[in-house]
Amino acid sequence: MNSSQRKRWFGLVLVIFICMIGASTPFQHFASIPNELRLFSGQLKRLHYGVPVHAKVTVDPQMLQINGSSSNSLSVNLNEPLSLQSNQSGHTKMKVKLFGKIPFKTVKVNVVPDLRVIPGGQTIGVKVKSSGILVVGHHQVTGSDGMKKSPGEAAGLQLGDLIVKINGSNINEVQKIAKLSEQAGINKQPLDVTYKRDGRLSQTKLTPVFDAEDKAWRLGLYIRDSAAGVGTLTFYAPDQGVYGALGHVITDMDTQTPIEVGEGQILQSSVTSINKSQSGEPGEKRAHFVKESKVLGNVERNTPFGIFGKMNEVPTHSYSDQSLPVAFAEDVKEGPAQILTVVNGQKVERFNIEIAHVSKQTGPATKGMVIKITDKQLLSKTGGIVQGMSGSPIIQDGKLVGAVTHVFVNDPSSGYGCFIEWMLQDAGVLLKSTNGTLGETA
Image 1 (spheres, helix red, strand yellow):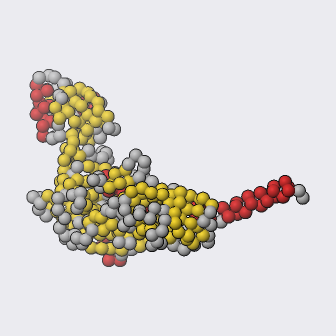
Image 2 (tube, one colour; image 1 turned 90 degrees about the vertical axis):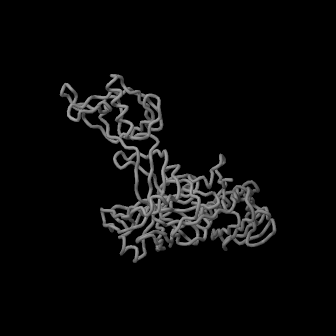
Image 3 (cartoon, one colour; image 1 turned 90 degrees about the horizontal axis):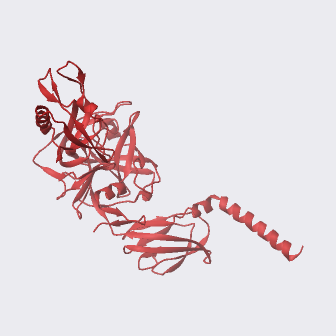
């Protein structure tokens, strides 16, 4: 066998060897080392790849320490846990070389300033006023000719449309509609209506009809300008003076469209009783506003991840006044956890749950995790997750990781949760930069 043939055989054996290694579970674990890691300043992060090989890891020791070493280069056994300790915020790189010589991967490391928030769990009353008049239905008006019709429907207005202007003036109060309709009817002039549908503004002309039965000018529309309900506070960020609650968007009960908030308030609330959940029939918390004059905060945004606004003081009846660190979405894992919520009065209690499934999400998305109530005391009181529990903070390993959002109708002991990271973004506490990394707001 000549040298050329030997090289070909050696190359073939090497390819087969690499393929066998690549197909092995340990190597697949090692290959799953991410291209980017995110940590909070001061955070200790443990990585475990379970690969029986040695490697040299190179980092900037001013930003990161590997296994407690202050050296910029360290030989490690990747079959053992690898700990990263972040020292200061900023961007750096971690270079990994197999056997200390073969370049394998360069991992981008983004260290975000330390962030701690006070977990909620309190039941809150929510009052919101929309930024316009929401169309929630059509009704037939009997005209002078005896014919029934809906002027609003004839003008092209649909359920879920948000009327924002009439005759060029902003409008967000239902009580003003009757007066404008009467004036337009008497003057025999149509109303110039500006409305929003799917985020786009459009215009139409709406001519009121004198209702022969009610003896009043009508538009043939069912409309609404506000909503109220009960939910749970998720967190309060004292450094920024903001809060997050509910974990899901507030929608109109008739049209199921998200309410575009013009203004709103969250108020102290007390749970008076609980209608237990049953299979096929979710239960609910029954609560009343304690003091309508005691406003806890305002409502500035209504997003897929809840409501957000300003809160100027630590809310009362907290489970603890101590702040907790928060977790990035990729740090949440399947296993035991706890939720904070109220089942009687205003007392926030801690209950055991299991995070049964975690979705891999690289960007904001709902249904980040599936949770299951395992606490026998909570199950006996509520039957599982009930309406009004949405927003209850989820805590795992001493960190705030998410919030309860929805119940499974056919299995009330289980439901969905969202990652706290997305709520913090919508609260303005964490901002997503153009390169896909996160930073804390100033």
